Amino acid sequence: GGAISISRFRGALVGAVLGDCIGGEFEGAEEVPMERVLQHLNGLDQDSDCILQYSDDTAMTRCVVQSLLTRGGFDQQDMAHRFAEEYRRSPGRGYGSGVIQVLRKLASPQLSDVFQPARAQFGGRGSFGNGGAMRAAPFALAFRNIADVKRYAVLGAMLTHSCSLGYNGAVLQALAVHYALQGALAVPQAFINKLISEMEAVESEDQARSDARALNEPELPFCARLHRVKELMEQSSVSVEEVISELGNGIAALHSVPTAIFCALHCLEPRAGLPEQYGGLERTLAYCLALGGDTDTIACMAGAIAGAHYGADAIPPSWQRCCEGAEEAEAWASRLHQLYHQPPQEG
Ligand code: R7I
Ligand code: MG
Ligand code: MG
Figure 1 (cartoon, rainbow, N blue to C red):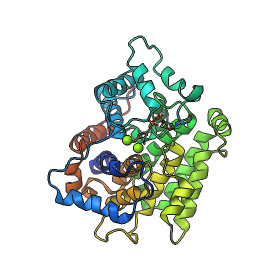
Figure 2: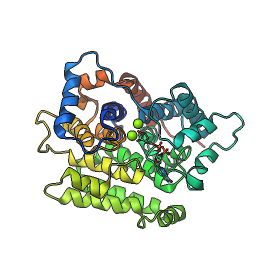
Figure 3: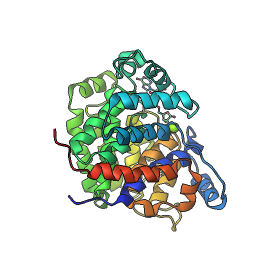
C-alpha cells in the first residue's frame, strides 16, 4: 500500500498517553458515573496549568519507542535495559506488584538471558497481566510487515510477561493498532473479523493451548472474547454492566485488551450519554473511564487504536496540554513514521 499519514502515527502515540494520564484518575474504581467522568474531562478545558502525570503504561511505552528508534529495530537487551533503568529512576509510577521483581532482576549486569526473570513469575508460568499489551502500540508504528508486528510484539512483551495470555494480549493490541493505522476501522465488521482470523492462528500454537487449559480458560481465549465483542456490536444497545461482565475491566490482558478494542469500535458513532460536541477520540476515552477498573490501561490501549484511526487532529489541544509526555510523544511519532516507511534492509 501507499504511505500512511503522519497524523495517524501522532494520533496513536498521543492518544495512548492521553488515555493513561486521563484514565489514572479512576484506576481501580468501581464503574464510574458518566457525570463524574465528564466533570474530570471538563476540568482539563478550564484549568490552564493542570498536569496529569503518566503511569507505568506510558513510562514503558516510552522505553519501547526509544529502544526501537535508537536501535533502528528490535533489540531485546537494549529494551530490557531501558525498562530496568526507567523503573530504577522512577519506581513510583504505579507498576503491577509482580512486575517490579522482574524489573529489579533486569537491572543486574550479570544477567545473560533477559527473558529469564519474566519466566520465573507466578510459579514459573509467567504473568498474564496487561503490562505487555499496554506498551504494544509502538510495534505497530515501527514495523509495516504484519509478521514483524506480531513477532516483535511477542518478544517485547516476553521481557516481563511470559504467559501466552499476557504476550498474546500484546499481539492483539499491536494488530488492532496496525489495522487502525491502515484505516480498517472504517468497516468495523471487517476489522473485527481480521483480528479474529489473525488471533486464530496465534492462539492455535501449543503454548497458547496449554496455558488456556492450565488456567481454565476456553480454547483460543482471545478469539472467544473477540466473538463477544462482535455480538455486543450487533446489539442495538449495550449497557456498561454488560461490557464489564462480558469483556471485563481488569488487570489481566484477557480482561482488558478486547475491552479496549470494543470501546474504540462502540464509540465510532455518537452515543447516548456522551456530549454531542465530542469527537470519536474524546468519546472513546470518556467511555473507557466510565467502565471503571483498569481505566488508565484500557484508555491507553483504546486511545492508541482510536488515535491511529482519527489522527492527531482529533486530539483536543487542552487535553494534550494537561498530559505529561504528550508533546514528546508527538515528536517521537514522526520518527516512528520514518522508520515504518524505511525501505526493508537487505539481509
Ligand atoms: O501486567 P503488569 O505490568 O501490570 C500492569 C497493570 C496496569 O494496569 C498498569 O496500569 C499498572 O497498574 O499495572 O504487572 P504484573 O505484576 O505482571 O501483573 C499485574 C497483576 O496481575 C499481578 O500483580 C497479579 O495480581 C495479576 N497476575 C496474576 N495473578 C496470578 N497468577 C498476573 N499474572 C498472574 C498469574 O499468573
Ligand atoms: Mg498504569
Ligand atoms: Mg492500569
